[in-house]
Length: 128
Image 1: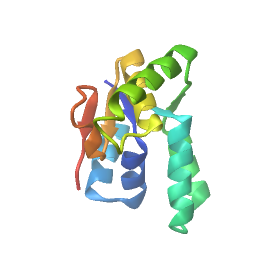
Image 2: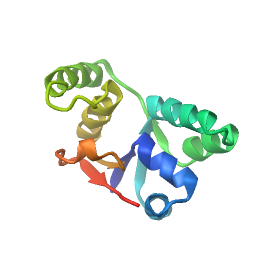
Image 3: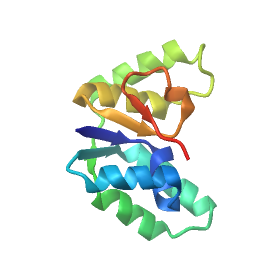
């Protein structure tokens, strides 16, 4: 199975929470794992703000996944989706719509802890 792991799921993985344990199980199975560069940036920002181990976090993310590049087509789809959804879901970020557009492009499931993905068939929401 293909999974695109969201920043929220990576953060829980690094924390070792119950949700993080679910991410760990998926990582150790025979799955294709992807993340976006922007997710690496979001996770590193959170780790830094929490005074965590930046290099350990960075190495964990980059050694366990395929880094999915953003094509101009994905960027266009993400921008259109963001404009459409922003009125309904104020908390949705452009990074979130990049996740949705990217997951659709590679036929992957988004692994996330963020509830604002709940109405997207591409999302699997994990909880603590």
